[in-house]
Length: 213
Image 1 (tube, rainbow, N blue to C red):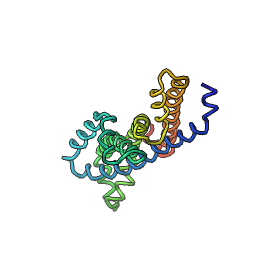
Image 2 (image 1 turned 90 degrees about the vertical axis):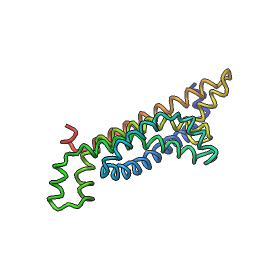
Image 3 (image 1 turned 135 degrees about the horizontal axis):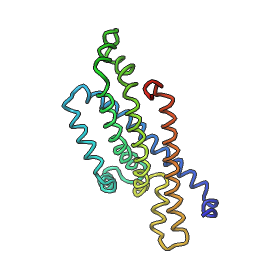
């Protein structure tokens, strides 16, 4: 194993950076989309149940099946990988964003508007900070899930460590089959732990001490 890593450390590092970059960019894009959608949903109560239903159904769709549907439309490579990771990443963030924003007490919102804040200012100064811990939890779930989805997306020749896993499976019985599979799997697990630790740190930096306690 050590010899295998030593001979390929540059390629492993490059694929690891690709994997992390794909997940981070997809989750960042998903966060923007999810928060934008949640701003609309909380203003129309009837949409909340629909949003919960859509996110629940979306999470039950097998990633291989969705990838198979995307390949004829988007081809192979990076584009279908970004699309499928972004799709799955949106779901937990959207659900948590709607839940967190809806749970902010109406009295606080009324007080903010009574102080002369506009609806936009009230959202960013009152509603968003109070909902942020719940949204951040959705971000953490989304990031961990996206790590695995990004590995599956490598089936479409997308970037990342998933290619090592598929290479190992394709070479079962070969000398390096197990090494390929283990390096790909353990690399993804390590990246997931690092990104989760980064999000925990982000929470400590962005969530006020009063809310944390």
